[in-house]
Structure formats: structure tokens, C-alpha cells
Image (cartoon, rainbow, N blue to C red; front, side, top):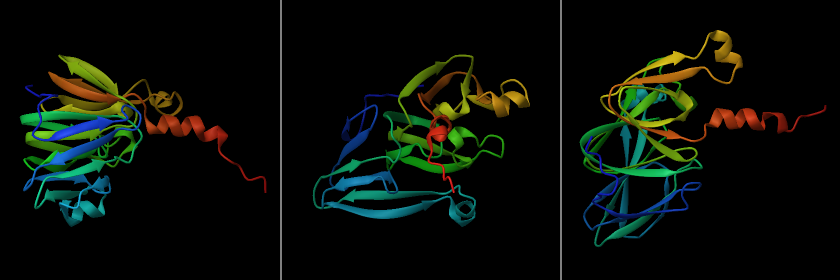
Length: 228
């Protein structure tokens, strides 16, 4: 993998990482940035927005589609602030004719040269962080930003590696992956562990330090209960 964490076609900066990651990108005049729908927090008046629908109507009906806004700087450079919906970290990579797969909610932004499409996982593979049952495939040459719930750790995979499905944020193309159970069905439902992803091959994976189902389980005993 030639993937570069430093190279970029845009001037950008991160603020408030790793807890409340916020991305600011400067878009040169005449250029366009793809951004997750609803993630725009601030923008200059030089920016013009168009909404694109990825995946088609049939995938929209099954929850697999992806809405992406395209921001184009017209009549001068423009700057915009991007705030992902989840509490956590953000990461940037520069793809060199490469592909990364993201969990369904991880896409933040990319350059126009990055093709962003949804990829069906199947009924078993759709357990990534409890997200919708599809991955986001990002391919091409250019900038890509993604986010997580919690902090982000990068893992180099050389042969075989196991990651809890709820902690997976992204992984590189070329890695074979298979969803498996840890232990038997009793472990799946009662141990707090269960579904893991077994990766094989050489590549990179990015994991998040927290997962939402674990948080929900932790706060559940403290929920208000009606005494009526």
C-alpha cells in the first residue's frame, strides 16, 4: 500500500481531536469537494452545493444508499467546516489508485477523483457497529476523510487478524474477511462478545476505541423508569 497520510490536494486542518473531531477544508476556486450529507457546519459564500444520490432507488428502499453533497468554489477560494454526527476521531488518507472500504457511517469527505459507492455485505456481514448492512467503497486517487465513534487506531495486518465487528472503521482492499462467532451461541447472546471479523492477507485496518452498543448497555441501568 502506497497510502499517504500526509499528502493532500487540499489545505485542511483538524480541530478538537480525538473526542469531537472537526474538519476545516479550503477549496480552491473551480474545484469541488464531496461531503457527507448534513455534515456541513460552516461555509463561505463562494461555495455552491449540489446533492448527489448514490446507490439508486432500490438501494434507497433497503437503506443502502448514500447521499453526498458536492461543494464547488465559484468566483474565489472557499473554506468550509465539516462536523460528522458521531462523537469521536477523524482520519485522512491520500489514495494512489487504491481502494478503502468504510463502515456505513464513516465517510466524511473526499476529492472528486474518489469514486464513492455502496457495497452490499449480505445478511451475516452486516454487523459492523450495528450499522446498516452495507460498506462504502472509496476508490481512486485523491483525498479521503473518515470518522469513528471513539478514537482511531491503525493496524497493520500481515497475515491474519481478528477484530470485533463493532470496532471496525475501515480496511484496505485486498484483505479477505469473514464474520465468525467467538464461542458458541451462548457466548453470542450473553457474554458481551460474539461476532468478530477474521481478516486474512496484507493491508491496513482502522479500528475505533469504543462501540455504540456497549455504551447503550452501560447506560441502560440508569434510564428513567416509570413507576405507574
